[in-house]
Length: 89
View 1 (tube, rainbow, N blue to C red):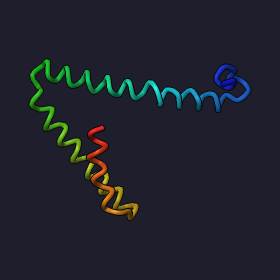
View 2 (cartoon, rainbow, N blue to C red; view 1 turned 60 degrees about the horizontal axis):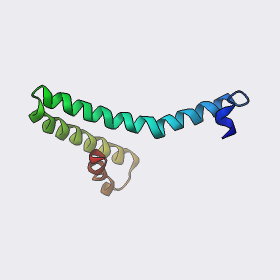
View 3 (cartoon, one colour; view 1 turned 60 degrees about the vertical axis):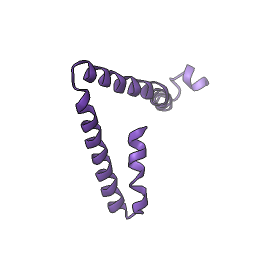
């Protein structure tokens, strides 16, 4: 707690703590807001039917990227379907 109030003795540590706090609290909220705003604008301007196709293409891209990563790291193929779970959240 003291490090957050007095950044000067160890500035890199203070910057790291501020960044971690931002990524833990602000970034997820902005991510949800961005998705909701994008969906609202798409539906408001008549692109609602294209949202499903766009989402499906992004899901396919996630699966291909997961497959490539699993192949390069020589991991188990059973990890690839977790990309679908990630896309839902």
